[in-house]
Image (tube, rainbow, N blue to C red):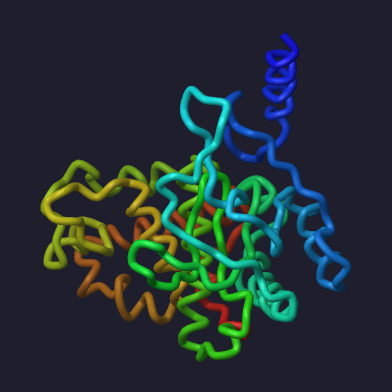
Length: 285
């Protein structure tokens, strides 16, 4: 009887332990104590938590990113999670923390971050796909995502590599947002293109309002199209877009400009986010 009582208490505790998602009673409780150390930057991480409600962890174990609830069970498992990650090098946390604050977090209002950031963000090093044995910059997990390169690797990056790294962080964030349906999108965007249309290729995609071809003969999902547009906008200046996807000779039916305007106008009014300003801003290395 005592065992069932403990499980019941654990289930109740779960209702407040996570952020931005519906939890099942079977999820194990993971809580964290901040600060994780007595470094000067620890107070910055405490401030981030107080502002956003998200744990930014530079000390962690594998279970913090690899485990997820097992359906119909009171246990968690890391089976099938094919990534390994090392703890951040504390000597590089201040530099990398400044990088992600200036090039990612500062792009969004605090209220939006609090609404859309995951329960935790792992600040790691040497993030590796254990199947391909290749290093990666970011990857998602059950209730958050990992940002790597909190190590001497960051000092070896050229600016062009850092630009790509910045883009991957933003993309990981937006993939999280869309996967959890944390924001809405205007019908002035979603009603423009046909998301049941198959055979979208590099030859016809612009005329249909898409900026990337489909995979094989499959139709392009709405969320994929949204991510494509958001990443194009926040990764390029307006001048660059005017010379490429918004160029009349490419945007022959005006659908791309219509979707671009719908998205940028909506995020300004609904969330106080200027997506194009993010794209216009230069990297802060």
